[in-house]
Length: 369
Image 1 (spheres, rainbow, N blue to C red):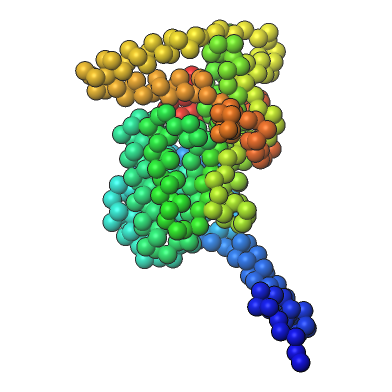
Image 2 (image 1 turned 90 degrees about the horizontal axis):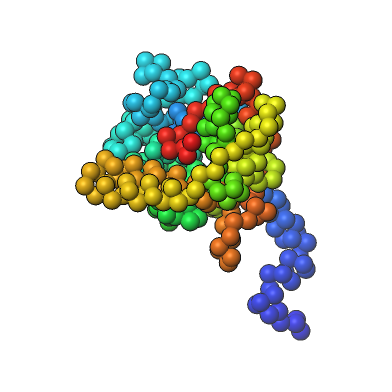
């Protein structure tokens, strides 16, 4: 009489007692793994949004280096940094450029995707100022339009550049970014949401000031905040790798640059050291920022243009008092050790390059200094 086999263990025992079936199962698993590996390394056709910014350009270059076919969707007036003109739609970096209107879903569908095959959308698109109208138009609505068009075009993976500061959302652009993150997660597409720490360009506003012999401005004693700055090139490479690294799929990815977290005081000390000068600091009280925010907010109720300036002041205060590191929800404290690092370029290497004339920072509209 045959011993009855419990259905709970049927598959395990059958494979163990049937070498041929076990071999077939192993071959099937191997084929699956091989197929996944091949997929992760395959050339993709990539739609790149935000390609005219410094991070977008670095990301486009990284995608091209990895062998992907990149098409940049850009606005007709993308600041003063076009990848290419409408008459010459292929940039010098090998990126095809299409002019689209992100506010118009039809433009994205027809002028952008246009019935062509795309595998991935990589978005480095962000509002320039962080003002509420700009933030909700670009950081949210433009991304929703792109997400819908991407789904209709059969895109399977969407890589979104967000920001680490959305962990503690107190500003309009942070809430707009969070809304876009939520929509992407709920879309059913494979996603990679990249939340970088501080950018080199955002921490370079005082280089000229210090070169002219003026003190380095700090809030409080200069140790209120810390960050792990990341370069455009290192961030662009990290974003491009999200197409291939399965561990970065369907995840929110905080990321900083190499080395330990640094404070504004340490940034100033390094800058003076590179210039061969003794450090000089001038402390700005946070209360002064509070007064500016309160004043502009009050006047902004009467004069709407000043309401936008009040938001810029709130952005400045946020960056002056909040670290750009992973926030521990249990303690509500920023954790440098829990903030992942990547790349090889340090902020102080960048300072040296700027002082030597090898680099020139392109600063954001709402940089603190």
